[in-house]
Image (cartoon, rainbow, N blue to C red; front, side):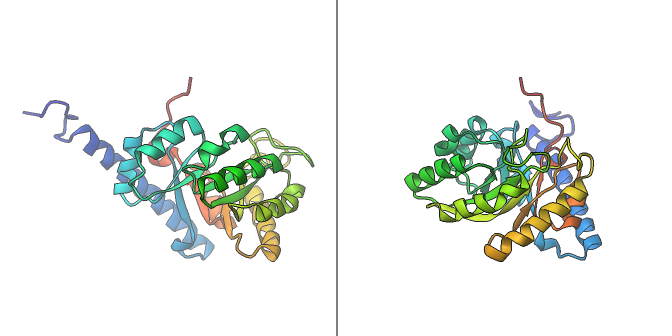
Length: 252
């Protein structure tokens, strides 16, 4: 006779979910390993960041139990309470979504890295918040390959010609550390539908940036659908959500 609340196979819902996550992680790990082999890279050169948006803190804890150390969120109103609930899990929290300046103070309270730095006003807001919180926040400059010069992309990100000035602003700001660059494969423009080409250009920008800022070694690119292209192009961090956690519920 099954225990009340079982799943039909004798497992509790939590145990069943943990087994599901473990299986998904194993499949993603195999994909990353294969891509690293094809690129002639070491597996340890690529960090898996699991994007846990729309999923509960319980899933984050299960992921931590399964060995995940890097997790990401894209909405502060969801991320802040989730990070607080998992404060004892020894996780590195990445903020990967478009960030409003009025949310900088909250994000600075839990985020170890912000991947979506794309304008000077945000640098100022994050710097003030980091100093107030007595923390150092790693910053990645988000690059939008579909943005025109001097503008921000529809999904965030500075145009490629704005990277140098923004990097200097981050470097000069108190409480911030320039860690590298990030992009999302563009949906419009000449690189739409060509993630590998976009990721190759991101690596070129990263290489040029490191001449002046040698510590800015992070290259954040690739998601569930295109992580292989990102690894082949030299990404150091891949941001994977649905391939680990499953199809996301629609946000209302």
